[in-house]
Image (cartoon, rainbow, N blue to C red; front, side):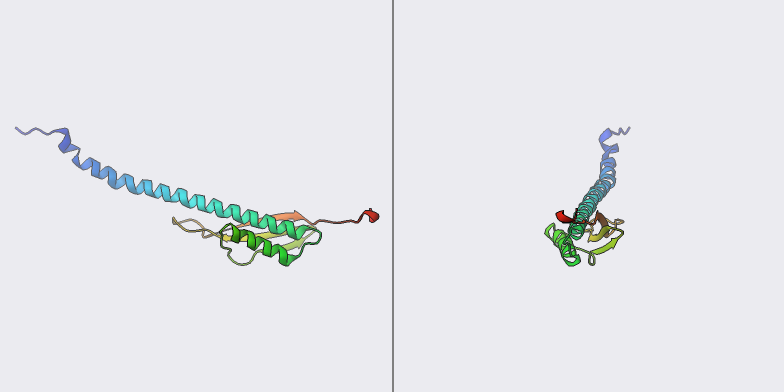
Amino acid sequence: MTTTTSSTIDRGETVLEVVIAVPIVLTLLLIAVQAMLFMHSAHIATLSAAKGASIAASADGEIVSAINSATRTAAELGAQLVGTPSLTVNDGFVTMRVRVAVPNVAMFFPSSVERGSEEPLEDFVPEDER
């Protein structure tokens, strides 16, 4: 008569758990890292756009210095811009759009993120004209 113990029945179960569980856990880890990289790039794009729009909206703001400021801010934070930031002036508002590349760790995530900022144009009125 042959008896089977639980160790012989469970022998393949551990291998099966490792073969299924490890890739799932690693995939979830890569997705979490990719989501963090995406959010970090989005924050850099938002900050760069806000700084550029703020400089362009000031009374003595120049378009070139605003674009340079947005580019410099992204570079200082370690991001790579996709193209040149765009600046538009419409109806008393300045709008700056910045696109930043997202490092790719996991598939199915966008390769870049674009953010914008809008500031009202500063209207400086000298004191004697008030």
